[in-house]
Image 1 (cartoon, chains in turn red, brown):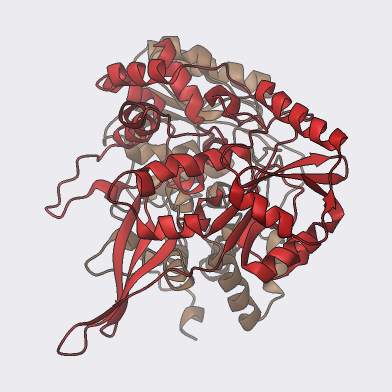
Image 2: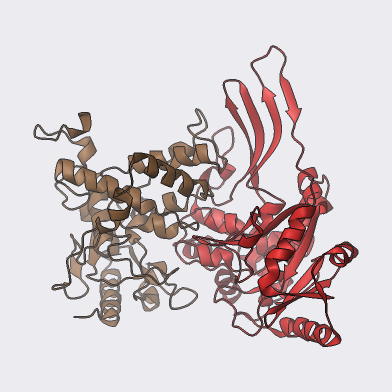
Length: 344
Length: 288
């Protein structure tokens, strides 16, 4: 285990930038956001959690697939390979690390694997970062409800915990181990730090966010039973504006659209984020739309995360990061809906 | 004089109960409990038993008039409105999206409303700065008098000090951040086009990818679609997760419309939206 002073984080950042691409939280007008770092001094670990989830490191809002030129007699097309430099993703909260494992189910663990996600994922080293267990959780968070600890190192390659003005770094995977041992300017942590780290992880497991734990299977079954109870869904979607804010900030929403963007015959086929809350998400070429109503779309979102996903993959597709709740223009809280369903 | 939120809440409940009991309306658009006190949610009361769930506090910034167009024409609706929200209702009546006789307007005279996300007072920053609804059937509190008269355009000072190039650079920088979640459009009570031009794909007016060209196409077109129609409720700016100050553009256009045509959006039912009305005395400034 290694350690460094928190105010020397820019040195660690600079070292990582020499080895590849560094993606880390920076403070912007709207809040903290993960950005590709070009100035090591901008890395800022004094954040609660980022506004947008870190999924864009592996699943960017726009991903180019094919460049083409239709102006020639024979279609001229060329595949676009993702940039394969090593990527260091610094300062990911445990619930967000968990989201990568859930996204892996779709993009790499089930066939066909998505080469773009897979390559980006393999090229990345994840520096997880524990929440502060001495401060109360944000009112919108509910990760402990989904049995995710505030300081769970699993899923990270290297896990970081704040100890006063120090940052403790512990390798979790062999990949993290080899990187950590080669990093310059880090001090060796002592036995006392090791104990602090282990205690902290344990305290993280006991850390409570706002809701009591609920069994995945119970939620999944309840929502399945409620699926055709239109009055229930209509009532919970009364306030919903059907915008895409919740899905775009969500770390586990993975829906996308493939678009051809052509100008004067030349163009790019690219993947862009899409959202099940959009009216045209399910619009078919015939003009038929199976989900024209807001309640149908919100029901899909909730049931996909808490019911279909559990039935199909055995895990809820939500990590309780609270981003959807914090960013909803009308303050809809996704887990309050689940609780309402359980009480119905 | 300070606002008695409790009294407004009680009156709102009382009116909702009365209207639902007498079957004067089939639904009441009000505010209900959210996941905590600082995050109330728009709430629809359909039965007398729903009335107890109604709340009102300084975080009830949402413009409920946005939901009016969601229900079939002819639905009898009671809607709780603050000043800017009442202008929405007037504007929607002008545009024939709702009929005056189908509505019971529950006016809320209020100031000091806060953005639930930031806790910031929104009076004339993102909203129109009026305290009393411009149109109502029942007033749920005492009319506000003696408060300083605020101009909705005060916040434009910094923006107006920029020259054309600086403004262009400003908006490019702001729109680079846009993630195209369309929260602004969906929160906007005047954005009711179905489908929105940006969702059309034959032809495709703007690219779907969240990058500057498509973002500019979407926002600049939306801004101009709202010229003379924006009632300055500020919902677009509060809805934006990326904190893009959309209100600046809307307020700037509203100010120019007001200067040119002597009419602000959504003030009187008898008015016609400035850009669809021709009067001999209209300003020719736009052609200069």
